[in-house]
Image 1 (cartoon, rainbow, N blue to C red):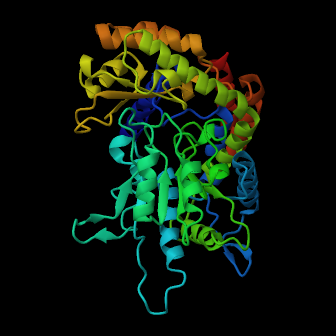
Image 2 (cartoon, rainbow, N blue to C red):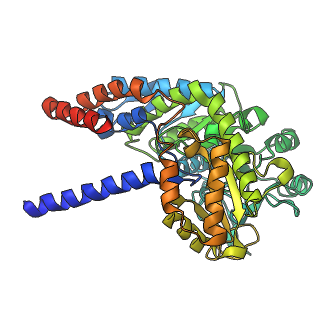
Image 3 (cartoon, rainbow, N blue to C red):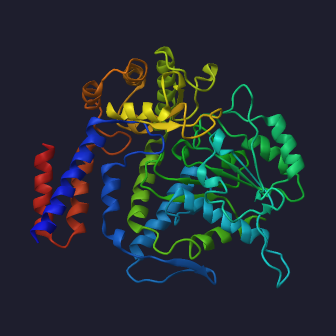
Length: 479
């Protein structure tokens, strides 16, 4: 028993040390991460986190297969309404537990959709051709044949590869599409599905341009936008559902305020030619891809959606302003920044820097980490291999939420330049700097949130005396 206790004690000490390092002493600039608010975290550990609520539409009504689900049913329906409000759409499927799963749900549904009129007894076919962003040009992994697209698109028997073509990019700026060549590709290839969206993402996607070209086709393609990285910037950065996209997918924990989950949204009214696709998406979400869809994080997503709808205007404006200020400060500090200077280098939360003249991206990212600055090494479009990356990818969303403004990102750019250009040790400076930014914004203040969090925690465990002592210790530590 003593060995059991010692293992748990050792692990708890490591958890505590990691929490302190990541949440108090370090600057997190990884563009695919964020920290949820206190109340979102408390929802994640509440009672639904250990429960099931499988459900599906049968004979026109939603059937739940477990008892004790009235509350979580209310939560899911309310979250659908809040997210429909955020995206200004009518439908929201929230059961995918990641952005990758959300994409796979759509790809499965597409195969069902394109086979909806096949003669009885004829085998189902895969999608004939898909247009997406090349992985080397920043395309999202989950939209590649090696990712969630695997096994849903036909293979070219001559080349032995899936029938996937890529959005062409401009020679003078590989982060922007070449619309002239894109029009030619659409005319010659006639894809059944177009997948917009990237993981190295600094400029808008040509949704409106493509929609204008394909809507007159006899069999127009489905337009899907994987907004995983920019979901929380919907509307301020780009509003693809207004521009002609049919489907938006994404993960809810990057620029969105939520826990780690996925979603699919769109508008598919009864009578719409794509209504069957939406019904297929629902069926591929359950029972096609999920059983237990992580009800604790579903509850947390609802709370995060309240926060997002309340604070999105200020948050989105601050994120985009901070990203441009950060990019400008890095440029002025002697770090080459990708993108057009005339555009402010970026239109999203991301800033991309080219560090090849200073060393390998992996080595530079490690050096920054040793100085408590967490980034993401990145192969840039002209790199031959991801093992020799010449770029670093950064995002401002998490530190914006912790209160950093444009002038603060200028100070941070100085620390980064010192590390990259001069191999200077700035770890203690960074720790002291981070200690100015510990209170989360765009949510309830700690004073407002703590009593609510204490009530949630106190009710989440049957041992009320233990919970009361825990809360008492928590309040002592905070004070």
